[in-house]
Image 1: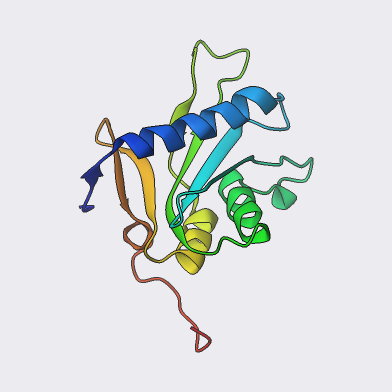
Image 2: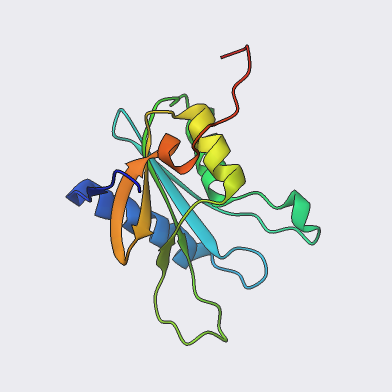
Length: 143
């Protein structure tokens, strides 16, 4: 069982930034996930995932947002979230929060062990520490 906490106003603002980036950049078959990361300084960096014809080359939105933040000199992460945009053939009207995939869980925990992740859990939007989503994480001697 996860140790989840309720969202604060700033968490809903982070979700809205993820929604905005994908609503502005949605492209069927190319971009359907938006992500946003808030750094410990309070800055928010958002990005979309980049789909490739060869699925293995696809880069997730969370990775793109983390990379964007790091490229701007922000290396300490507070909270991250990803949202999915509905496809035209789906009978869904708005974006929804999605949990990070396994690779993103690894990446988030590599770069932000203390970071929170916003997820849907038991029907509620909540946040939990990134390390809780990746128990018994692989570590190397470099850490």
